[in-house]
Length: 548
Ligand code: VG1
Ligand code: CO
Image 1 (cartoon, protein in one colour):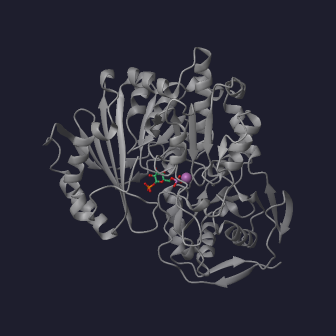
Image 2 (cartoon, helix red, strand yellow):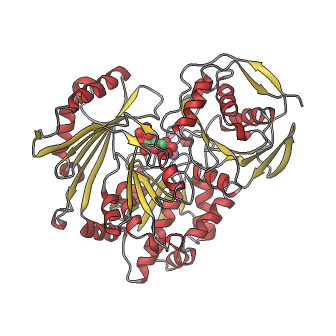
Image 3 (tube, helix red, strand yellow):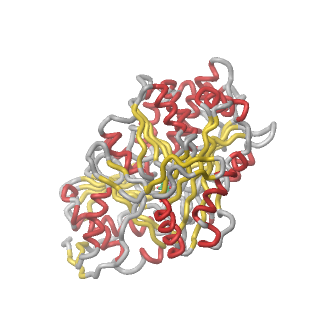
């Protein structure tokens, strides 16, 4: 099979956002659109020639077709071997795990994460480097630059590869290995957590849980690990079959989109524990009976209790959180005397800190938690960590999720936290709002806004402590003297219009005041933010679309 060069023209707008290139499926279906982007990866990543590449996705509509296209381009561009998940399925953390385990030169993840799937919905593609993590900005910038000048790509004519049959085949000179998507990942989880203790927890019969895979990629992973290996009751995993359109839903594990498990945990008969993951398996939501663990608190609780898990017995080197994530983890880091880092939104910014051994755990408010075991956030990993923690606390007298978190607040104080999303607003209005805020910044420090005095106000800029690279304009931060914060930024993952994210945080040290309703506890700061940013007049929205 001869590689052939196909002439093409550059497409505008192939710039990766917070997590890869995300567009409507219809955009990707334009002739040459996907090919151009993939060729730009091969043109800029020289190590892939003669190397091994991992390919897989979350199973959404267009996944299989895209994989066939990528395989042909990979063969024509001299890739020696591709490892592809059976059925085209690999969760994002599993891709990261496989890249690292087999020391491949990189991987391609096909996903638009929590965005809906289907012919009229979203698709996405992301390149991960040899460390297993999402490419840094310098790499994605180079890929983007290449897409603006590309005039040909290499491919070859071939029949589609059978993605459903595990085993090896040839595509031209390239070997294609269809692999079990779950086995390597499940092995890694077993090496990190006390599976025996979790098995005992399930065996006790008094602990009831549910995992909602939301018809997305984690179904097969959760069934194998939770039900087959750990002995959770059959049926523990719901919506466990990956569907191309995720059953018509948003595979987004939050209180709005994963309401099914919220209901299952309510009331005296509610489940002890429930969790959900997103389209590509990197996000998690953790619930106890009548209790929601915010992702910011989850990171802090895991950091404070990491040594219960065998993989973290020796302690953790440090923690990092994205800038909008609450400062709950900072308090734990301070108490433990370990490093603490604040990075821009997006997992790629944790990569250098993890590689350099400066941090062990990291997380984002957007339902992302992870550690140095891979270079992506990892939904099931977080669920297993919580199960390990519940099992460990069970030995010393059964503690519920709520008890564990309340005890944590008692020790460290509570960071009340919420995020308000205003989705699909007019892009120009959104840019105008951010511009308006930037103009205000210089005058804010020292000003009294209601009960709060502004300590600092800036447009967050991050200097990577490992390689010195600088990332500017990462979101507006307004910090108050009591540690409260207002943060605003525009989403970099949406595919229609703009999404404004407003993040609010307030610290409450007094345990007597840890039981307030979050929205009420934060109401004064929410009003200050709405007024400062002129949200309603500029966007026409009086209320957010989603509150988490
Ligand atoms: C969102 C989240 C961010 C996360 C990113 C990718 O980005 O806020 O924390 O890293 O999604 O997650 P943005 O730019 O829309 O705020 V995933 O699960 O979509 O890969
Ligand atoms: Co995701």
